[in-house]
Length: 114
Ligand code: AMP
Ligand code: ZN
Image (cartoon, rainbow, N blue to C red; front, side):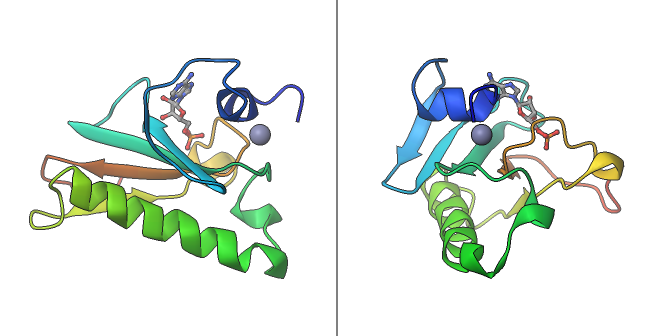
């Protein structure tokens, strides 16, 4: 997608602090962290939101969650815990319409979220 911020990060046209990369997934630090650890995990392939994900996205959605867990372990969050969030659509506050998983940790989280 020509005009997508996260596609530009995948293409290395916009810089990011990458913490993990493989053939299908990229993980990088959120530019406005909401917790001591705040990493975004995205598919390299563009699709706008979870609502746009059909059956063909089963494998990549699994890889996103496994990558989030792997990054959480690398960041030392496995014992204390962490939160994984996929904002989807207007009520969620989704701002970037390239599917992404937020990994948040390093502080006590509140529930319910705001
Ligand atoms: P969402 O509200 O779920 O769409 O989240 C989008 C996230 O992308 C926000 O947490 C932003 O801080 C983050 N973000 C926006 N631009 C960049 C960027 N250039 N590099 C890293 N994170 C970004
Ligand atoms: Zn994109």
